[in-house]
Length: 111
Length: 115
Image (cartoon, rainbow over all chains, first blue to last red; front, side):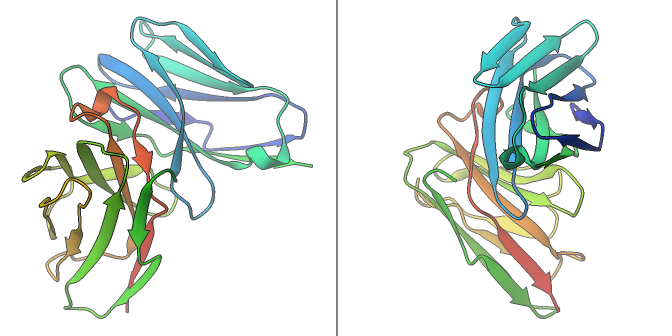
């Protein structure tokens, strides 16, 4: 299984602080994606990082990928209350048509 | 939620009944997917379709069935053979059939409760 495992399971921070979430996976990947889910809603794609990339930025988001450690991290800078949501990593294995999702990190940003 | 719609938002079913969840997309995407999400868990793939009139089982297909007669539509039937159907069901689509390489766009979900 390519399943990603996020860490921590839950994270609570003050508004303005940075939030870091980690993801580990088991075998070789094509790419790794991060998604966000507000409570009771569908998932929204945040960023995709390919296996030959080490870092990507999108606004206040920064994603890193370390294929030697089979891990990725998502950094949200200057967090806002509206960032409160669950964040999932999803791995795509070599030759696979599937994305395999982790269990998510539940982020709470306190105003 | 992009151009993907799911209906209904909430669905209640009695034990022993089949029920069909609707998923429609107007993004002209080739591939569509059905996932199940249980509380505090990630998404698990039920079925996916890379092209019209073709679909494959995902990790937890038992007790579910799908059809893909039109590019825009990918309905999911939860049959009475599914022993624990209460869950949140999410439909997604992607541009190409090699969905793992593509961004997936999700609908708002249907929450199914078996009474």
